[in-house]
Image 1 (spheres, rainbow, N blue to C red):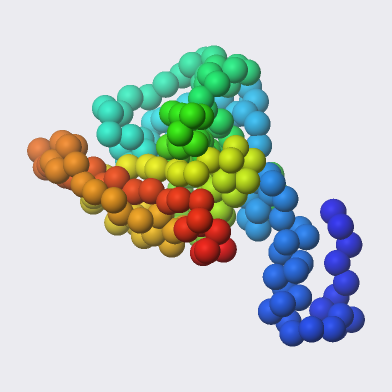
Image 2: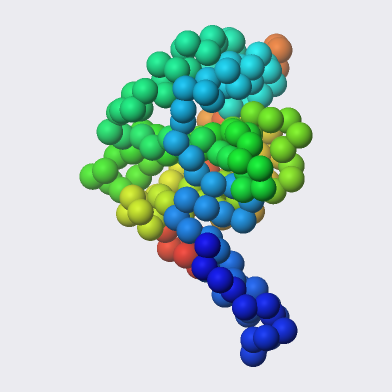
Amino acid sequence: MPHCLPVEGRKGNPQQIQEEDDQVTETLFRGKLVRLAPATRDDAELFARWSQDADYLRNQDTDYARPYTAEIYIERFNPGHEGPNAVVFNLRTLEDDRLIGFVALHTIEWNNQAGLLAIGIGEPSYRGRGYGADALRLILRYAFHELNLHRVGLDVISDNAQAIRAYERAGFRQEGVQREAVLRDGQRHGRIVMGILREEWEAGR
């Protein structure tokens, strides 16, 4: 890791010095709290445990929830399984290298420079503590600076207020609603379509 001088030994206002340090310590795969990591076979057991959490699955996807075995995840973790139009990372904490979730860019249309985003924090104790926000910052930087995408989109169920706020803080804008597209426990919910363009992300950095 590059050496950073202590604040008291450097000239300039503290906020500027902190911003400079952030730029030094953050890398393409490393944020303030998490890093983007490749999946390994050892990760499969934890993903299988998360798949027993129905609320976690239902917030991730509008398809029906079902648990999976570790063997299924091992197959998914095989190199190249996601195909040429997706990039998937596991999320590990910087403090203790703990696996806490995943983030992905998928359904990438290279000719249109556009893709979709998916994210999940599987460990309940790490939700709502900034780890997901840090992962969003990392994956958007990766999308726009490494993959040279112009647009990243996603959709989220309208009753998932916490996720909607997190996406908006990351710079996503609501673009439309698929009305009553999701049926959960006898209740119909909209599917909110959100997106962010590269210039919007650049302006908000």
